[in-house]
Every structure is written in structure tokens, then in C-alpha cells.
Image (cartoon, rainbow, N blue to C red; front, side, top):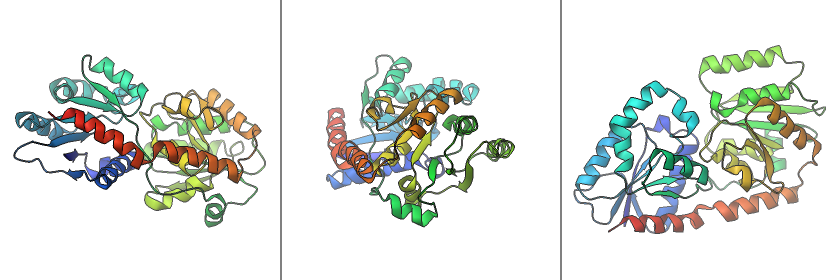
Length: 337
């Protein structure tokens, strides 16, 4: 069996999507599955896996795959989630009905990353085969709380919150700032924002932070940090915050968990059940509920090294790619004649 990966351009994969694709690619190769990106003349033993939507070349490629009898699977990676669908809706509707719907309905299966996304996809594609397989860990990082804080210059008595994501209205950084501005904070609290976004929106958030500087904690705007350098921000944080309006999976939440850092996120991600039992703090995506989740965090005991190790152990056992790869291989085999 050979799996062909067709992906968006590199500049559209920055962050979680790129990490997810690379993780699956590596895990399949470790299982002896060849992964390529060149369409063969004949399709025996090959499967085409399309990642993401809204790519005109993908619609053309899937048509050629069907002509050659090559089975296709499409992973939308959240690009049909309600929030994403409302963004540039006027542009997406015509394209969807002219090209994208045929691309999706012509696939042997559509692959969701969580049950929430699968349910929404069934609304778009009644009668289509929808399967669910989670994404996996994006690196080898493990808990390293004290060393990471030393590298970043964070004092032992500081309570550090980290937002690490693309700065986009969907991600809810504005909700986090508004919540922090209306809550009683511990004496030494710091919010570290790691990411970049559309300059006008970032400037709007910075203006809000300046106007409410007296109520907000110390605020560090770090800019974009990708690759291995990002891990120390996850490792050294006391709480990772992603009060997002919509995530089909939310890889950054998993990245926090894999290094033992609890996460605050919303019911609009698949993490509400996963983080139950004290693993994290779940809220709805509005400023008042984010404030209540923060209040629960501030009133709880600071995580011990043992608690961080237990959270990381749970994440590694459940989401390691080498375990998930077996499930992907079994799924791919069901697509072959």
C-alpha cells in the first residue's frame, strides 16, 4: 500500500495543520507504509489523502484519481466548521457548490478528527461515509517546567498564563484580555502572547491592553514562535489558554497536555470530555465564562511536578502517533478494493 498526501501550500499549513500532517507522515513510514505526493499512471494499491479544503488543484487531482480508479479520502481539518464557514461565506458558497462538494462526495470517505466535527460533516454530506480518527502528538517534548522558566526568565513565584496560537478573532484572545481585566489577579501574574496575525486586529488588541493596563497582568507580546522553540512556552506555563470560538481538534491543547501543562479552552473544541477530572478548565467562548474558568484556576492549587507528569503520561498514552498509526493503516485498507 502507498498513500499519497496532497496538502495546501506551505504558507497555509503553518502551525497545527503542518504538524498534524508531518506527524501522520512519519508514523506511517515507521510502519513501512510508503508516503508520496506524485500521482501514478495507475492506481493499484494507492490511496490519495487530501488534507484541507479550498484548494483548486485538489479538485482537479481528485477528478484524475477517480478516472484512474484511485480511492480518495479527504480530511477537511476543520475547514467546514461553522465559524470557518462563516468567514468569507460569500466567496465559499459558490465555490463549494461548483467544485468542493463534488470533491468531497467523490471521495471514498471523509475523515474527521473528532466526534463534533464528524456530526457537522454529516449535515453537509448526508449519505457520505464519515469516519473519525484523532490527531497525535506533534513532537518529543516532555515536562520540563523549571528549566523552561529559567530559560525564559520567569520567576518561581510568578503565575504565568500563555496564549500560543495564530492571533485571529476565532482564537478568542480578546475574550481572555476582557476576562483578565475584570478579575482579581494574584500578586505576580504574567500573560505571555506567542503568535502573530493580521496587523489591524493585533493593533486593536494592543490598544485594548494599553487602555486597561492598570487592570491587566504584565503582558508580553512575543510574536510568532514555531518549531522546537515553542515548547519552552508550553513547558514553563502554569496555564495554557485557548478560549477559541471553534476548533475541529485544537492541537495546541494537546501540546500543552503532552508537557504536563493544564489548559483552559472551550466547549467548541473536542476537549471538554478529555480534560474532565481536573486535567483542565472548560468554558463557553464568552468573556464572563472565561473569567469564571480563570477564577477556578486561580483558586486551585499550583500543579506539582507529579501532577504535571501524570497529565503528560495520559497524553502520551492516548495520542502517541505510533499507536494511532495502526488505526490509520486499518482505515486506509478499508478503502482499497
